[in-house]
Length: 199
Image (cartoon, rainbow, N blue to C red; front, side, top):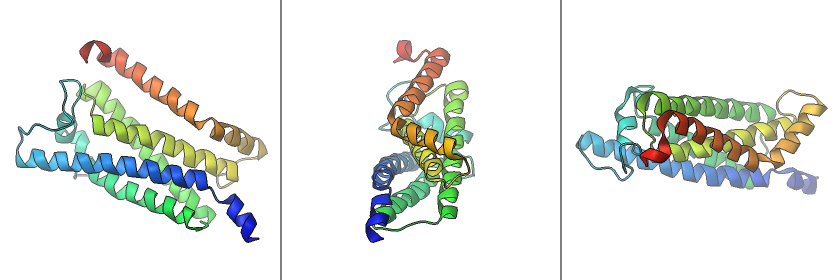
């Protein structure tokens, strides 16, 4: 029985969540420091500001940068700390109940919806791309895909045998699916912001 449990442990997912969490946490932390610098000096030169097109000052000082009344990066620091902890717990042998996986999926769904909204705001409203924000976006998308496809594959989310098989197949192609998502984002940004000519 212990051997069976060990073989079923989603080690790959756990490692991915830890790595993704660390990367996104670092981006959120950097954004938080930049926000503090802006509060100290509204004219501060931030490390993430490279041009009119690439920079995070506009995002941080906009209403979109504090949706809940406080800087968005603080949400990232809290949320990605949880993701890292979950990944570590899985590696340590913790076996979560189905309700926990469903809850995690709902959290990841909220994260990816929020990220898609922020992407839209950056491209269509603010007309600027924030480097640290893009790091967070780039991590959130595959993290959502990984958790969702894993849950469908394992039956934690409702779906028949066909859905589980399709999710299992898609799970092995997650890298390609993620790249396609990145390409779509770049095309939308290029069409609406003329990124290549403005770099």
